[in-house]
Amino acid sequence: MPGPVARKEDAAVLEELRQYLQEIDVGILSEFDEGDFRGFWVKFGDFPLILENQKGKIYYIVAFQITLPDGPERDALNAYYEKKDPHFIFELTKAFTSPLTGFSRIIEGGKVVGFTLSRYIYPYYHDFSVKDLDRAFQAVVSQGAEGIAFLKTIRPSQSESPRV
Image (cartoon, rainbow, N blue to C red; front, side, top):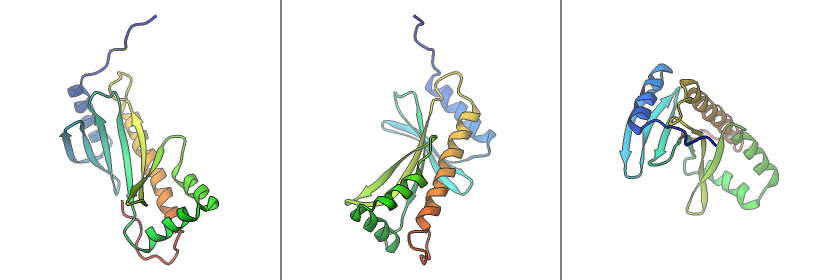
């Protein structure tokens, strides 16, 4: 039986991620190392994303958060959830789900205020590459854009789109 797989050290992973972000022209907005978490806030196209590692874990999460402003859009979304409208929930799930990403609701005060799309990456392993990072960014942003487009259909007359 093979022994444990050698993994990269934290400092090497951080340096490699900085290099890969530069190679794919993703701007680092900020870098953080606070408490149990470390990572980067980045800008991919027009969208801010977080690349976050819980210290001691062998993965980072690439996450794209979509937050609806307080108002009619959020009210309409929650009305569908309160009615447990199966058609709406199916369409929303279809818009936010892909084989490459996960999604979860952001709930505040018992109401849905937005969604997070995520994908795990494994930069501590030696076979991790810039392609893996780019694919994760592409996946969460592409699926997020589809989800935003769906949310815009809830209230066709809305003047403000969801914030990201």
